[in-house]
Image 1: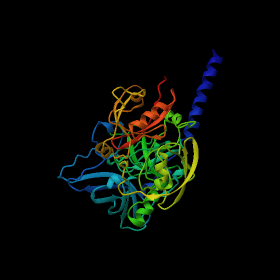
Image 2: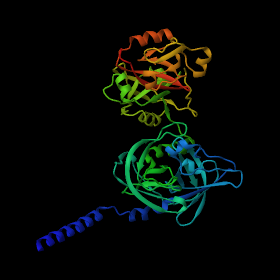
Image 3: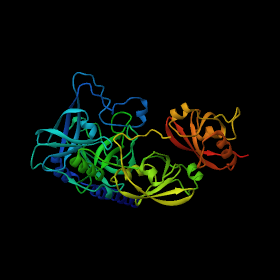
Length: 462
């Protein structure tokens, strides 16, 4: 029995030693917190009576999506609505960075320091598209944070947040970087921020607070959470500091932010679409619409082109394109690599400036009583239908069954292209449909509710 007891004792000692080693390897955040807490502030506002918030939860769909911290915010005319968030000082003369949704529609903005001083802040400028706002308080020699480089972040790296969740000032939470470059379209379906995903506990009130790396540098601004309950569920998102600094520079200089613009509507390339376009694998941003008089149109980009590289940046997902184009200054000449008809082409585009309100309106026949072999009953467009869909040409789907229904085509859709060929009439549709190879997946460009989308339709076997 003694040998067994000795082995058990040795195992217990090894477990204790191993636990001690693991504990010693965990980061110590105490110095980081002591050195940076003074530069983190609490931001409170009084908002205009009767003002609403676009971060309210309008319906059950947002239960599956991302919500801002300060909802639902049902505001009546009395009393004035108040919000609470966080921020941090980026310069000794009083510039403070926070989220736009913390101070949106505010009549008064108050910044409270950790020494209990309260300073009234003025809004220098805000950028709803990135959810950032720059404030200014009248003070000198204020403590500041050290700004880092979010591009150097690695997945799995430790990060720490300081903020005021639920009004509990200067709360500290830590975790790791879970992913980078997350695409979170806003309520206008715009996507100009490659978010940092973390598992740091973030809750209402943390909005606008800093995200630090272990070197004590700010690498992000805590902005959003994924939640079904209104509280932390293990997934949080921060705006990269590299994006924020570009916004700050423009807000200081101009009070607003200018972004690059191509003038295309894009979508992801699925496995079926990749097959239809002759790609080895799903990759790139598929152009489903090119706006008239846009930089893309001037450069010769076309519907059905797949952008795989922009100005030296690989485009693996469609969400990658707005990130790099948005950060490109208007007037820049950029090289765009596209796949067209199975071949790679390089085009030069002069990047335009994103309009204040991005125009997403689309610029722009019965096939017989029986469905075609594709499962479609179609008819030529009337002037009224063409105007309603805002297209120059195409055919209207009256019925969709079989292969067409399986592809996602619906009654009321307008088909403008099949297999990279324009469809301007029922006669053209008949010709194209009759030439399709059975068993092959072909891209079909449809317009639904003035929104163009490519669908992959597999041609039935004869």
